[in-house]
Length: 113
Image 1 (tube, rainbow, N blue to C red):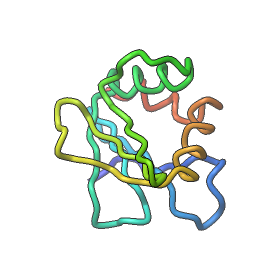
Image 2 (tube, rainbow, N blue to C red; image 1 turned 120 degrees about the vertical axis):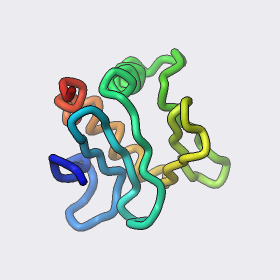
Image 3 (tube, rainbow, N blue to C red; image 1 turned 30 degrees about the vertical axis):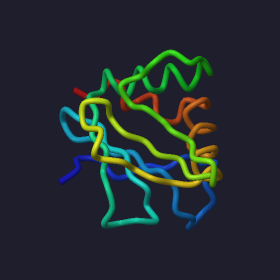
Image 4 (cartoon, rainbow, N blue to C red; image 1 turned 60 degrees about the vertical axis):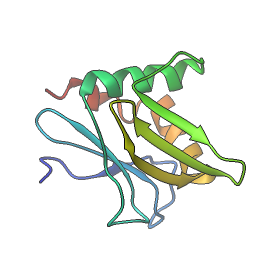
């Protein structure tokens, strides 16, 4: 289904489950590898690019991919155009993903199209 393999942040330990990103010819996909049958969030490269920019800037600007952090430490991601598809991870894995974003590890996904 995907033209490239799933990629996780280098800040996520070897063999650990984490937030993973993959791309098809026109879309970017995010999932939590600990839940292989779970939700796969789908976004455009532009939406993913805005998401990356917001996380790098550490601003409250709205992005097409929204993040909600629960009181119990869970992190929920959903695309605003498909709010019923929710990828859930935990705070440790989310922090590793954000470190990878800030290090530029996922920037190449913005060029897919």
